[in-house]
Length: 153
Image (cartoon, rainbow, N blue to C red):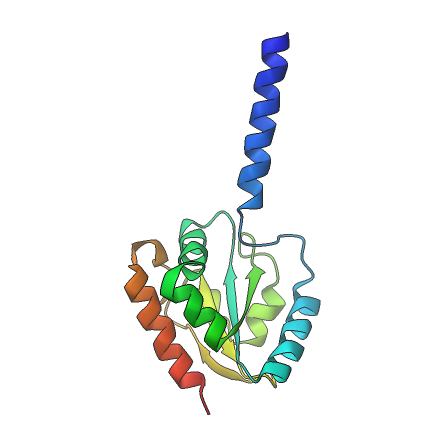
């Protein structure tokens, strides 16, 4: 019985650690969070990079991990206010997807760059990031570096 309890404790701890690493907050009030992010963007004069994805999606998790390291992390911090929106199984926060022209139609993760006054500057329309786990760190950097240039006035 004692071994069983130890094993159960280890399994629960492992599950909690894995859940902590999931990039998309499935319980978030995405609309309220978007309004807060846009307000912060107005203060900083940086565009918002809205990334739509889901925790079950390996490409979404790969993109999230890539954007948190090295030159990609530096680019994100320097050029954007980043916000992630969970789309579940294409059944969650679809009103946000619709508001910005359905960027998830060709796959996730999808990205939308918004001006601080909530105008679309750029949006993925052809599934450009849907194969993120096969993109190199450099490929991801070059993609977002191009996007950041488009976002400049």
